[in-house]
Image (cartoon, rainbow, N blue to C red):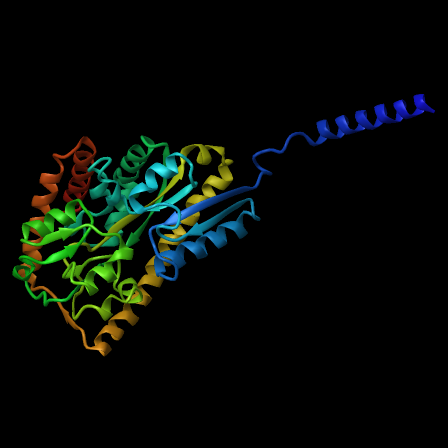
Length: 346
């Protein structure tokens, strides 16, 4: 009896080993990847919703093999900590405002915003895809063990203000929330006082007169944050940020662990998120403009002469900023060379 049990056990073990050899180890093509992602945007805003929808589509398109959970701004780490956190794999993916990484290298600032040099989202996408932009971003991110996986663009930004802003002269002495980098330098040239604050701090800072004005993403998101409740004037569209570039970074080791088909699927997700953000933010801006007019806020525009002056100041700032680091020079030279090819600047 004992011998029979031993034989049975031996047969079972042999069958188990045979099945294991037939099935083989779980391949990368069969593996499920569960990631976490933090975005710069607050829950409910177009920046958050567009990313959420695109990630849901990614999960369905990959039959659940790549499942990314989205977290809003500041949930996991602060904005300035995101690049390092991704590199250490505190979470796998970040939707980054690169201007907050300027403390690591000033060159991250012009990646995020070339201030008044850009005029059209299409030209930004062409620069990224065909004139060296993505190569520079990959190089900048790789130093921190992060893979650049694509960009989403923020459209024209307003300036929400407690004081009227009808001319560039009105910026003298104005305490304005803006990230460090080119925009801060541009406002300084106008005599304003830049104040670096996270988006979540803007409402309180305006309400308590810590600042007089703020620039932060789109008009729709400003209204969703309630900034129209603590301001009276809106400069829209403004001269300082026609387009901003928000990049998707993935932990390098996590990225390399994906099979090629999931890498392609993720990159397509980024492109869908960019498209969705463009649509959702535009719709939100239209509604927001009607809302602020209904509330009685004054909407102003600069004169063509002031807009041209602002563009010349943007060029001056860019050339000065190019001296701050090797990456700064590479990014700004690349943008200016591209704009010259397109006959956008002389």
